[in-house]
Image (cartoon, rainbow, N blue to C red):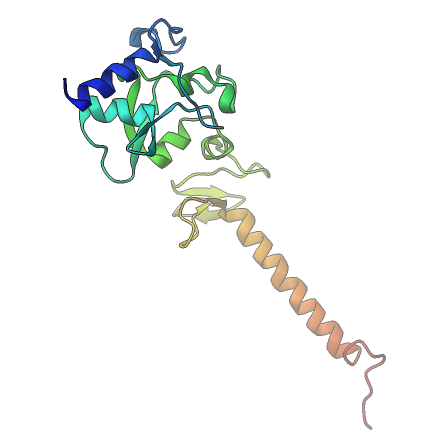
Length: 196
């Protein structure tokens, strides 16, 4: 028997194939719960060649081949509206091949229910301005490219363009007022003296 087949047999010996059926996706069938070692985030792992490997990645790649660079396995059985956050989520130990999908890290995070995903789903900023990439008019001001500002060096972040513009205008007004006061009060040292 080859080493690869032995690794598969060892893997299967640590799986409970009678886990819960996902409420959101019952057509997927039951979760296969990993009963072996888990990391501090609740994800199962195995050690192959002295290296820790995610059980979900191991199973996915055995079934479908290597994941492309930048991709990782995502649990389709996970439902952020029902599952507890963090390591308590039972789907983190699921290794059912039918429950795993290869996605980008960003897509995985956006599906997770993490704060990043919650913020990305918001349609308004904290001041009630619409967050959209579509052209929009707010308070008589046209925003042809939408109201979302994405910084060039932090493309995973987004900000309300309306709030950002208003804050910049407020800072400009404050700088002008400070400069005016400095001139009027001789640099804050008292009355401005004039000759003549």
